[in-house]
Each structure stands twice: as C-alpha cells, then as structure tokens.
Amino acid sequence: MLSVYKVALAPVLFAQALWLRHAALRLPEPAGPRSGCAPCSTASPELRVLVIGDSSAAGVGVLQQTEALAAQTAAFLTDLIAAPVHWQLVAKSGISTRTILKLLQAHELERADVVVCALGVNDVAEQRKPADFVRDYKRVIQYLADRVGARAAVVNGLPPLHILPSAPQPLRWYLGEYAKRLDAQLQGWCSQADNLAYVSLQWAAVPSDMASDRFHPGQGQYRRWARLVANEIAAFCAQPRNVVNRMPYAKR
Image (cartoon, rainbow, N blue to C red; front, side):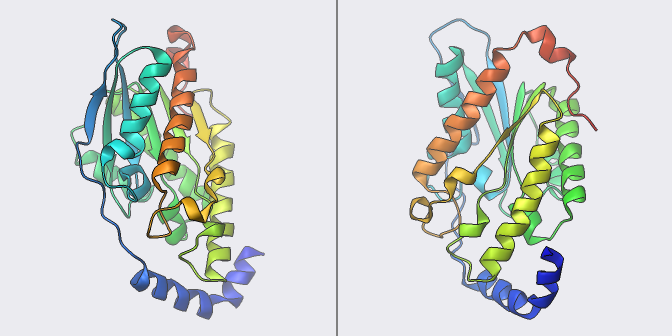
C-alpha cells in the first residue's frame, strides 16, 4: 500500500521534498580528532573499534567529537570492559550504503575488532529498495571484516523519521513508513548472525531532545546512544574469544 500512497501523493511529496532540501538548516560536522584512545589503568589488551556511517555517525548536531557517538562509545566501553579502547571514525554527511564503500576505500583504516555502523537515512532519501539496502549493507560489513579483521559489528537501526519535526506532512509520514520498512529488513538480517547486534533508535522519538536543525540527535541523545552501543560491544567481549573467531561474519 505504501507504493500506492507514493503514487497518489507524488506531486505533494515531491514539492515538499524540494522545499525541505532548500529550507533545512545545515549543521557542520563537529570539530575534533576522528581517532583516539580511551585509557584504562589496567594492563588489559586494547580493544579497537571502527565507527562508520553518515552524518549521525559523524556527530552532526553537537559541536565536538567528544560529545558525539564514537568518542563517547569508547569512553563508556572502557569502563565496562576494564580495558583501553582505541577508536577510529570514518563518516560523512550524505553517505548511504550504496556510496560508503568509496569513502572507506579512500581512507587508511586501522585494524579493528568491532565495527559500529550508522547508515540508512540517506537510503530512505534515495528510495532504495529494502532488498538492495540490505544487500549493500552486507557488502559493507564483509568488506570491513576482510580489510580490518573485525569479528563483530553493531548495526544501528534507522531513526524515527515519522516524528521528524523538520519535515511537513504528509512527507513526514511517508519517510517514516519507508524508514520502518528498511529498519525491519535490517533487524531481520541482524537476527540471523550471532556476531551482529542490532540497536534500535526508536527511543529517540522526542523532538525536543533533537539538535537545532530538528533532524539530528541532540547532545543527550548522542550520550544515550553511545551507552547502548557500548553495552552491545561489551556483550561481544564477554563471549569466549575462540567462539567469536569461529563465527561467520554475516549469514548470506
């Protein structure tokens, strides 16, 4: 039925999408280093985390990387596992699952034990088919497994676009429904592999907590998001290392 509504509302949706593209407040990506280490007083081996994705992974909505997803995840994680956590961020506004491989290929990636992915909003904007979206996501994960040696990945779901305050109705409703379709496919894929963890972002459906552009997460939301991701990585770390190494990276 969503396709039927898309056709019926096409003139309105197209006009509203053009308006949103020109009227939306564009915030910069936050300043600060895109790699670092959260120290720990213990002599435990270092855990290495690679964070990739679009503008939300990059931290748009806050001023400094210390307030964004990657650095905060490392800070929370080092307390949970009592070990130093090295992190690297490779993210860019506008990136989708279709285009991120070029971004990754252009960067010098460090070895990583776990990958954290935040993708999907731009796939909604590009109207990617759910099957194509998940297929390209699998390619990204497998590419990183081969290139950086990661044994597990935390896959973040799509944000609650159905409450997006910057978008007018019915565009807001349509984007929300389309995002739910992609999100359901993503969650279903993650449930098939023990070394993939899915993190829902539907808890972020609070417009008053969002950034000033009324699109990206606000400071408190990034902090909560980082805690959720850190918890999932800590759960991977609690598994016997030999079991994790034997697991297929992603069932196809």
